Image (cartoon, rainbow over all chains, first blue to last red; front, side, top):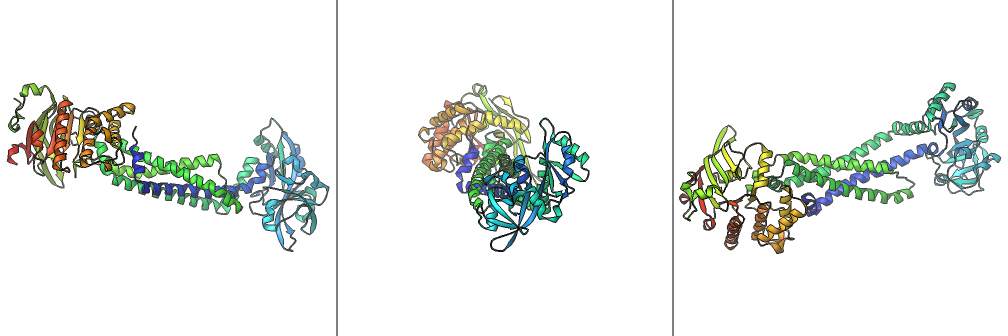
Length: 374
Length: 248
């Protein structure tokens, strides 16, 4: 079957290039901007997603994993007694000041646990053994700290809240949304560093016994911890993400970016398809004269929109993926999941078809008798 | 003899009407068309009757504004008459746009003054696309398109885009497109207006040959006196009524 749509589109190459460029621009804008946003949001929940805790018990109204408040450490005893709980441990997550060799003080986010290996924290260890942390004033420091703290070596010493710690290893990928580098140390030492967490904890991490449902176990824990909040992993990750999305205006910012991307795409595609429709009005009249219907013409415009969507998306996606290594050098992570990529593709197709529909009204009224006009 | 045809036969010797009437492919009877322009009504056709038989070439002549293009549009089922009857291939034409479209697909082939080819399609694709619109797809469409292009002498220009063809060749493609799908009626609107004398003559001779060989009823709206040489009948139209062509 002859595709008048494709042939017309390729016949006017400049218009086709402009249309595709508009779509590609919109796709790149959405993929990169939202990908960056998702990459950033990933940092907000990276420890939640990577730890093996099925349930997190927090102090009341804790907004996100980084901004923890403390509650009595003995609460963990009640949690351990709940049916369906296989393991429950206290965890401290606390911002503390770290002294750098330059004499400057910076903030870091300390994660303190008694048994790191039981909770898959840290999950990507470059060097050192987390089980050694309990044996002395030792820390594991994440490599992302080098951007703010400068380079460090295993065996170096750093002071945290005036207390000297030896770096016995390095981790990768443990970051905080606030960009404060993550430091891992023994629970009791972390507790001893700051008065506000003496005999207290920031969280209780809970592993659910096999065969039990996390939501049901969480409900049972709520019953015995009336002054705490209890979340499943997914709930806690969503709460932490939502805090940054809503409270910082990032969500609104992303919404505006996506809206602008879609608007640019629609305007470019609609404008070029409409101009094309107007210029080909006599051809469409001919289609009608030889027996074609409005639907035959809609199909031509729709097919053109679809081609623009597919080619524009392919180019936009290629550009976005091509930009990832460059952005990674700037420590910016563009997170594009297959689902997100598929959503953007579906959105691109809808956007282009929607734009094509703006031309439908113009061609619907074409009088086939115009073919007799010179 | 058919009364509506009798006054306007040209000087060429016509076959007996009784024999021809059984072969009628197109007939309009007492067709009227009125357009409304603001509060005014303009009567463009005032009771026109005309019949065309298989293999017959009818030239329709008339000055600008006489109503010949309106009549052609009505015969081609592009316009509906305000009153009167149309019969194409023995079937009464009536109904909505979908019904008219169906008649256009099945029974009518158009040739336009400006060729109206699709510039992005090759000669072969122009014909094949028309067949696609008429519901013929795949290899059948491709073979039929090639056949009619061979018929109009463009077998060696199938892959050419319209911009690479001469005016005469473009009009041959347009004729091939009109022939595709074997419609009973061909309607041509000033088909030689943009062609020089020699090429115009070739096109008219081609029209005549095809009408006879393919048994099509052919109506040519024209100002071109050369058309008289190939027409079986010349019909005049003036002020919305058929008239004696010698009066023009």
